[in-house]
Image 1: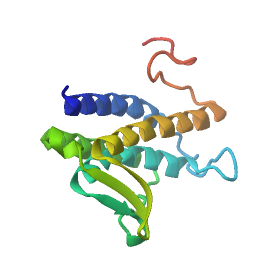
Image 2: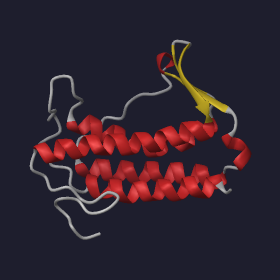
Image 3: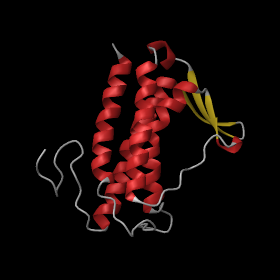
Image 4: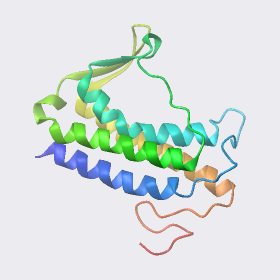
Length: 165
């Protein structure tokens, strides 16, 4: 089985679907959140698009320790910023998968906070987790859109707002 080509194909499909959602990002709603415990819309969308870079980070490191400054969230403010970040991070993740070998998917990759292990997977598992994160956060964004009467594009088929596929 050619795992890398499957991961590249899935990343590309998720990119195309996510791009449709980001193209609809509403100006003036950056600070919208459906609940006081919910992430605001712009930070949620920013996190969603930066996940596309994760295959690069995962394939080129063995761990991410939040307390050691290994991750700093990006701060964006416009739809154009989101679209540019999405494209750049997708290209980075795609390039990492294109130059990787199947054997590079086997070593472990770990998320830590100040040395405390939060989660650990094979690099393949970590990339799968990243792809799942894309779907999860895009669905969250879809709820935010629905609550703001923003028509949703189809993801894996038609939506209630977009019947064509």
